[in-house]
Image (cartoon, rainbow over all chains, first blue to last red; front, side, top):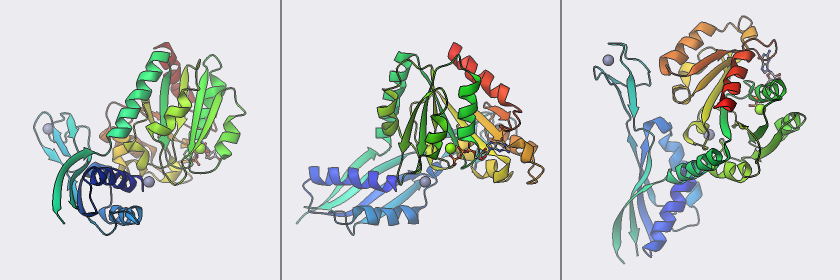
Length: 108
Length: 215
Ligand SMILES: Nc1nc2c(ncn2[C@@H]2O[C@H](COP(=O)(O)OP(=O)(O)OP(=O)(O)O)[C@@H](O)[C@H]2O)c(=O)[nH]1
Ligand SMILES: [Mg+2]
Ligand SMILES: [Zn+2]
Ligand SMILES: [Zn+2]
């Protein structure tokens, strides 16, 4: 629920700064390691936006993948591991934890 | 009526990060260390805090107890020699840096703050509180696949505690598997196997806490 309210708060602020009468759509980029279920986020967003100029706007959710790869041989992984099973090198995890309100489409 | 598309590019999690850094700076100036204890519901977080306070009377503890609603943990811990503050998170399933900030200001003169986060292995992981160390506690009664099912919280832990080991046989949990899973995900964490009822492993934890005070 808290993620949805953060989206609503920030979107409302930007919409007001731009003197919006209505918000048509929003695009949010969500890192995969945040483990957010898009359906659930959308549902919570609909609840949280009720009664605001965000009501009935379309929430587009883009999932951003994390880069999980061996620093030694470069092997890529889909899951979090510490050591590479190919070469024993360290596996680094980059990204996958961001949540960015990237775009907002308004009518004024 | 105009339609306008705005390239917002707003980092929605930056507010918590900023507040966490503020907490960290505040604690550093006061010379206070903070430990964020996360873990499964009922894994033994409160009992760990109680045992820690009782076993280390030479350390002044502040305790923050995060809970969805109930004050039962608060009633337990306040009987011990420490400053204790409950935080009810309401509907939220995790503490955040803002909730913590009000409380730490009142903890003047303590050496170490023990923070019990809300019991779950998913949500607390993404909310830095400004702590120095992250502890994740699970027990064998959650099943021996509990570690592999929640890699993200174990990846970012400094200490991983596998508790209630005396019950492992009764619930047919393979402790070595749990430890292997933890090691596979996180090679740098201190991994401790404990039983807070019979006291096994407790001393390893207490040594970790003792060293923090000296740092
Ligand atoms: N046998 C055994 N029981 C334990 C151990 N540690 C905790 N318990 C018991 O497990 C129950 C839960 O312990 P708590 O300390 O309340 O656990 P918690 O993680 O704080 O629980 P929540 O705050 O509800 O998430 C209590 O009845 C404890 O006495 C242990 O190592 N062995
Ligand atoms: Mg508790
Ligand atoms: Zn490799
Ligand atoms: Zn949650």
